[in-house]
Image (cartoon, rainbow, N blue to C red; front, side, top):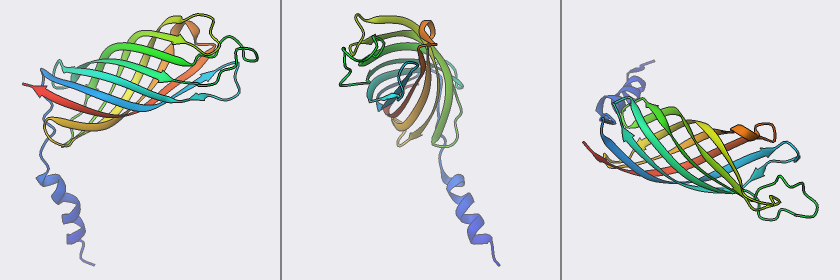
Length: 183
């Protein structure tokens, strides 16, 4: 059996693909649309909704990027103030700053990192807004459609630091698009 066509079909795209070309001092500005999932200790099912965000990245070096994210999540539309405990938010806002480690593989750019910031829960059965510090671990993959435009996805696990026993898990998954410019 001649394996040459199989080997060529696997190797040829890698041989002619150009590099991702991530460089230091490169800026990235993008929009995110996704799904948030909040698990509350006193609730049987998690809240699943819609989320939107903005992100900005800056290439500190070829491997490390500064990452700033601001996100809004609509978690629940119909929380019942009479029957539900006063711990079920309808909305969650967060703003985080951190660093990611970037791996350039041709046009694919996988990354992972950690961020810290502020979180605010509002609405639902909460009597007043709940402010808390938090952090997140991110993992993502971008694809450079052109040297200036990228699309990708990012998954994050957030940690609501002062309320870890009540809000046991907050996870987000985003589809992203971004414009890149700079050096």
